[in-house]
Amino acid sequence: MSVFGVLSDRGHGHVVTTILIAMVAMLFTAISYGRMARAYPSAGSAFTYVGQEINPALGYVTGWSMVMDYMLNPIICTIWCSQQAHVFAPGVPYWVWAVFFALVFTLLNIQGVKTSARVNSALAAGMGVVIAIFFVVAARYVLGHPHDDAGFYTRPFYDPSLWNTKAVLGGTSIAVLTYIGFDGISTLSEEAENPRRNILLATVLTCVVIGLLSTAEVYAAQLAWPASEPFPDETTAFVYVAGRTWAPLFAIVGFTLVLANFGSGMGAQFGAARLLFGMGRSNALPKSFFGAIEPKRHIPRNNVMFVGAASLIGAFILDFDLGGR
Image 1 (tube, rainbow, N blue to C red):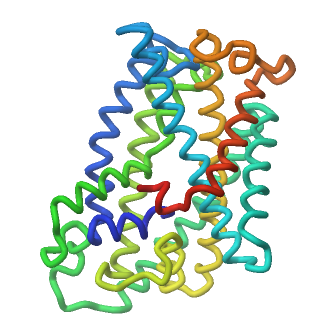
Image 2 (tube, rainbow, N blue to C red; image 1 turned 180 degrees about the vertical axis):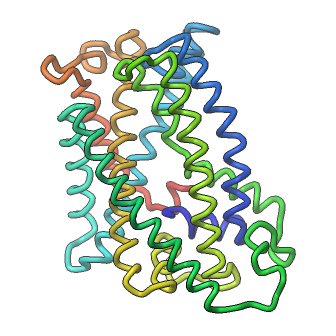
């Protein structure tokens, strides 16, 4: 939902198609991560996989590439949460919200993986209820506005008047953001029970569920708000779609997306911290800082704080559209 407006603009309205194409690529990636996690159930994730199987130097490059990826996700989530919160409370400056969310992400992750998991489980349950409500009211809205055009229901997949292969493929590269973070499951191999089995299952199932659920969400959204109509605001486009289907959903979905990005940002921050720990433990980064573990909660506290600081700085330098692209 968060990247719906950006995807619609970049893919010339073919949000559903870009998400489905991206899912195919991500499924191959998910299976690969899961199989490598069986061989190396390590917090280092792809850094360990490449370093052990191919070459330590290439592992170092891969690790830094992943760190940049993982650092971008909490930055994007901090930006989106802050922008949406500013819409709800315009009297509070954006920078105050950015500091607030970056600080809360960091403080919760410092409490340990069990606290993060409990918070995310609660958020997921609440968001699931809102998604179910959206599907009901979206169906009621679409069926309550009948269309004689036979292609109306297939246009979100393929619209001849807007189709541009280059634009769709460009949108697909952004649609990958829908799945970003699922590979972070592999960074928690040392926290998981039976990682040689469960990491593969969790990674693949997460990718499939994200793909199918996201496809259904944006399909309903494109039926309610055709691509030919511009959005009042590209960053929060889905909130306006939800408000069209049922006015109270404007605020409800807006708040829910804050929670969604809150959970995503918190999980991404912890995944990045674990990856940095794997690199620090292997002396790819200064071990005294990045390879340190807080003895009480057994978390890489230094890394959590490092990623939190980077997220806050990024929230002041980037905007959501630039970060997504």
